Length: 532
Image (cartoon, rainbow, N blue to C red):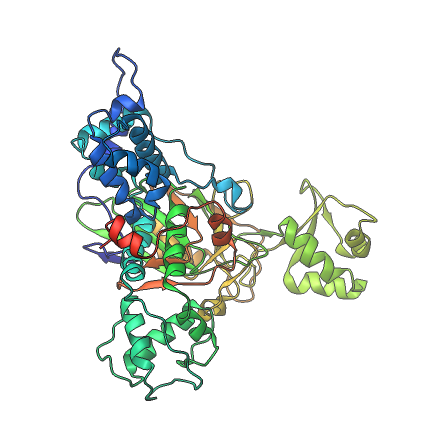
C-alpha cells in the first residue's frame, strides 16, 4: 500500500465542499413550505449573454456547442431578438447532457450495467446556482462530473483537442524502413514532436532515435497489447498508432468522457476503480484528512467475447480458499466441449487432476462425472440440472482469495492460478471476472480493522499440494465495504502527464459514436467558438 501526501494529476478532488454535494445536502433537509419552482425560474438571473458564453465554452467538456446554440439562434441573438426562452432551453439542455450524458447507456451494449441518470431537481440546481453566484460558466463546471476518471479523460482532451484546432498536431511523413535505437532519419523529429504533444518526455528534438523515443515506443507497445521491441516498423502497429488523425484521438477522449457521465457525479472518499481497457486497478482512500492512500496494480479482465461489465458495485466479503463453481457460459461452451470427446477413464482423470466435482443443482447430491452423457448434453439430447465445482487449492481458477460483490451476474474480483499473465501486455483474457495482481494487499487493506492481519491471512490459505474441503468467509466491516467502479476507458491522461490511448476491442466507442454529436474541428472551432 502506497501512502501519498498529495494527489497526482489524474486524481482530482475538490478542496472545498462541492456545490453539488452541498445542494444535495440542502435538499435532504426537512422541507419548508414554499412555492413550487421550475427550471426557468432557477436560471432567471443568468443573462442570455452569459448562457451563450458558457455554451460556447462547453467544448472544454467534450460537447459540441452548436448542438445547443445553432447558427439560427446566434443570428437572432445578433439581431437583438428576444430569445430568452430558447436560450434557457439550450442552456438547460447543455447542462443535462453535461451531467448525465446525451447517450443512453442501455443503447450501447449488454455489458453496460447503467441506466440513464435523471438530471438534478430544480431545487438542487437552484442551490448550485446560488453557490456559484449565478455565474453560468462556474455553474457548468460544477454540474460536470467531478469523479477522477472523468477529470483524467478531460485533462487529456484539453491537451489534445486544441492541437487539432491550431494545427500543431501534424501528419507524420510515412517511412519505408524500420526505425530503432540509434537510427538517424529525417522523420524522427516529426515523431518526437507528436509524442511530446501527448506528454512523453523528449529532451532532444533531433533526428536520432534516442532513449526518450525508445521509452515512449516501448510504452505505446504495452498499450497496444504487444510485446515491446522498441521498433517502429513501416505499416506496423506503432506506425498505425502514430497515423491516427488528431480528430479521431479527440473523439476517443470525448467518448470516454461521455462514459463517465453515466457514473455518480462524485466518487466516495474510498473507492476501487478498474479500467477494463487498460487492465489496471486503483484503490483511492482519502478518508483520512492527514494523508491519502493509493494502491495500484495490473488486472486480467474479460475477453471481447466475454466482456467484463461497466458497472458500480460494492465489495462486501473476502473468501479465503474459495470454491469455484463453473459459470453457465464456461460450463456450456468450454467444459462440456472438453468432456464430450473423452472416454470414462479420461473423464475421471480430467476431474481428478483439476479437483473438480459434479453436484446436483441444489448441491444436495454429489454425482459421478462418468455417469453423465456429456455428448448428449452438448447436443441437447439430454438435460441435467448440475454444477461443476472445483475444490479449493493453489491451482483453483480463483486462486486462494476471492472478493465477493453484490451483483447478480456472477462478476467478482479474485486471485488466479495463472499469475504469469500479469506480465503479458494483452490481459483481456478472462471470462468476465477480474483477476488481481496483488490480492493479498487488497485483502489486508479491507480487513485491517479486524483480527485478520496479513500474517493470519497467509497462514490460512492452501499450501502447494494441499486440497481444502472448505472455504473461510470473512465479512468486511461495513466501515470498510468499498465501492467498486469498472469502466472501459480507452484514453486518459495519467499521473505522469502522458495522454495514453489503447484500442477499443470491446467495440464500445463505435457504439457510442452513433449517438454522440461529433466535435467541431477547424477554423470555425478556433475563431467562432473561442478555443484558442
